[in-house]
Length: 127
Length: 130
Image 1 (cartoon, rainbow over the protein chains, first blue to last red):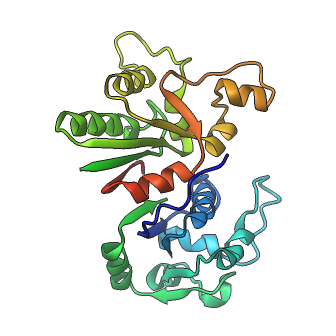
Image 2: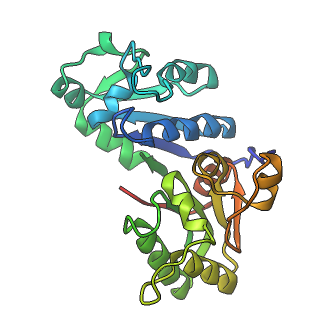
């Protein structure tokens, strides 16, 4: 399916990932949107808040629940020029996680900085 | 204003698809433009033409079809989400060798790029879901 990806318009896209990676399909289908969206050469930022921080957890193993382990795909985002990944500090701390538990390089930022990102964005996709 | 609409939940289970419909209708009545309605996640199920709700209830898929017919609205069902959930148009039926199709009139199946494009081309992309 060929699609027109060059519009000449560049907007600030913000993907807000709020949910655990497994249990519902939202995180998985959000990632599919990010991957397709990467072809459109927009200014893309991803934030991970609440249980969404678990999406980036290292060493996920879904073999016992029979769902697809898509967690390794986050590491491929960098190659697609999706490089701005932010994680909310409070959400990480509340879940007993640190940067060392995460599978990709992220910037850990405050809730206020997340608010600022949301305010500055033009297109927000909230999963 | 030019709006894009994203519907992330299925019909009847969740109010999101009702709210999306009511918003879309109100926006049109107020003279706004609807660039596209994009159905994602379980939202793709809003596009089935095989639903038969009780007669005293609203018919959610038919309501979308009628609104689209009257106002020439682009109703797009995400192909990846549709394939998972068994939403099929005649072309997909052939391509994936299925014995039936179920996409309602005035809906079409296309890629996620249509959602990104709606973000780029509209003044506001409004999400309906949890």
